[in-house]
Length: 139
Image (cartoon, rainbow, N blue to C red; front, side):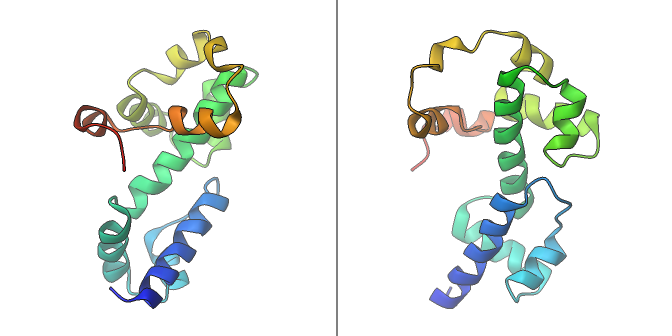
């Protein structure tokens, strides 16, 4: 993989970070990276260790956790706020990544991290897939 490929992949990843709540699909992201959809998906996984869809869903779940901790939105409102179009798919993916349902996550107290600086809180509250949690911390 060339440095130019990495720059284009990072451009697509940055777009996912900024526009996670918008409808994004692999063909659109591949166009942004100036690659075919298949090549983009393979290259993205090789560069970042997960598929574009998986990365996007992790961003969405990360944002959903923050909104659920606030407690002023329902699970359904959070689902649509982060760009998911199906409550069932959102709940399933949230449970898979976080290890508890969105409703259970929203209902429990989140005071333990109140005094932690945001930069540290982000590291420790980033969603981790259950398989990754068993494998140990990310590099």
